[in-house]
Length: 372
Image (cartoon, rainbow, N blue to C red; front, side, top):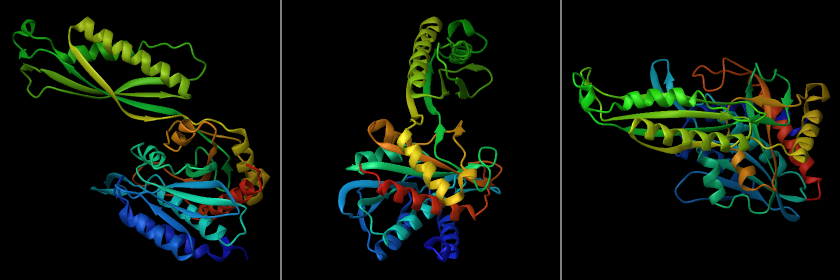
């Protein structure tokens, strides 16, 4: 019986314990403490950082070059059965469980390379990866992988993909300053809501000469408090999506240009800023090859899905964006997940945790054999 089979019940128990701890972004104190204790017990060196609960666990190999896994720890805050609370509806508790047990298994192996496990805060805010990059957690890292539960409509249970092709997403928040007036005398004012209406029409006309799909749309608009008054200000949020980082740059530039022109046209003051940004995945052939081998070894060749294309975003891809030389990929794990990620009632087949742990263990063993 191998390590994962021996620890089957412990893996499921750990998942349920982490699920109950659910903590929001930047508040993952109990989750981090739980994980650090288990890793320190078996001999991992733990490095923590000031101002947040992200940490790394490392075990020195014969070589200084590092191969690494990353797990996210935070939960969403959402309404569940009428109560607003932290809720693990994105599977970060599952990801931490699988990476933890991969670490517990591999410390028993005679690894050539140093192995590092990155436990990251605040993925849901698209800020945690950037913070960990600031902490220099990728020092000497040659290979980095992550894993993410996938909805059943993307990957069937029992299967996995060596790459999740997330798209890029950006939120632009803006403020329109007009001139307030009584609604009976609109000619004495300048209605920021009317400027917002022009902005909505203009962004719908955006056309880019690019091969991959993209979208930009308004997702939030607020202004005014009284039915008989033209407000002084309005605020808005735009959601931008694209399949590539190159297209996202063009889309951001075009959107900013339109915001500026609408301000001139409507004679209002419009200020805007990028509030959230997540880059698209960048395919790395070597990382995909290693991940494919690991999935094949763990689940069989017939259970490899070539690619998981997701309309969502993931801040894991900041690691590749900031370190273009990095060999990195995120594995998509089929787990019979319904009705969808971020749904407050998200459920999945917990036996998939066993599959995912096997894949991660095998993946680092494959990476350890490579001459980085």
